[in-house]
Amino acid sequence: MFFSLRDTLNPKHPLFVLANQIQWDTFEKAFRGLYCADNGRPAKPIRLMVGLLILKHVRNLSDESVVEQWSENSYFQYFTGENSFVPTVPCEASELVHFRKRIGESGVELILKESIRVNGKDSLDSNVNVDTTVQEKNITFPTDAKLHRKIIQKCKAIAQKEGIELRQSYSRTLKKLGQAQRFRNHPRNRSKAQKADRKVRTIAGRLVRELERKLTPNSRYQADLQLFSQVLMQQKDSKKKIYSIHEPEVVCISKGKEHKKYEFGNKASFAKTDSGVIVGALGFRDQYDGHTLKPTLEQVERLTGRMPQRVKVDRGYKGCKQIGDTEVLIPSTP
Image 1: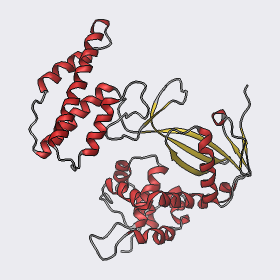
Image 2: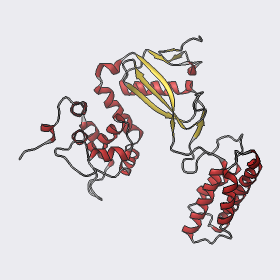
Image 3: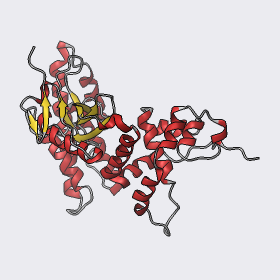
Image 4: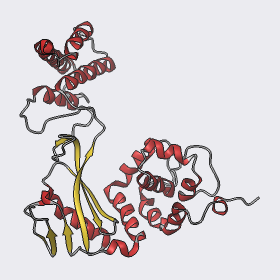
């Protein structure tokens, strides 16, 4: 009659132990002001949303996977505050995106700060290790031909939404040009493919200019058209190139990896103690590694309450010897 998840689960399970160590009231007090109590549909419990974000990173899952596995895993449900098993999904995966945007960077730092507190003395090490990596975006490998075809598709979609009749759809022409572009690696087809690339670029430019003429100056699509024009104008050696239409902030980063010469995304800096506790994580654009060290250490001080005495980095941070009172240790050239 009085069945509960707490009575049926293993109390030594890591998620069971962690659920009882986290101070969930901290998140309730911090995020309560972000919701309206008397307007609209009642919000999901804050512990549920915070718990799903923690489980997502602990188990390295996507938003869709963590929501799906929550309905199958009793320990997931106990971790997020459920007293009995619920066989349905807790929320839509997109609600995690909205929740992250709602709490912002300060809210995510609060979750990381609680993680540091749970680890106790291991997070108060005077030595930290800092390194950067590339956080890749979910985009295809960018080429000019792909971007130009994407612009054509976007222009046709805008014209259909606004009821604009284009002078020509170029459907048959683009199909023939696609066949010419496909086998560009064969020596006999190289010049033919390059000619087709130029033709596709010309068609994309025509559609963009036609929409600029037929749409009103204050149209909501002006930012999109400006982005399309920037893509069509960029050259091989252009600065601040656009590599994706739906993710225009993506940058090209080369970390010197043999297996992957270029990566497309943003640079991320991580700080962890010698015992393996992550005490800092920040996102950047494509700055030099040495320029990311000071903001990372400032975040470590903000989250742990103390500035580390020594920070160990690789030779990518060449030129940094001292950050405030913190000594920077860089290995010498072998």
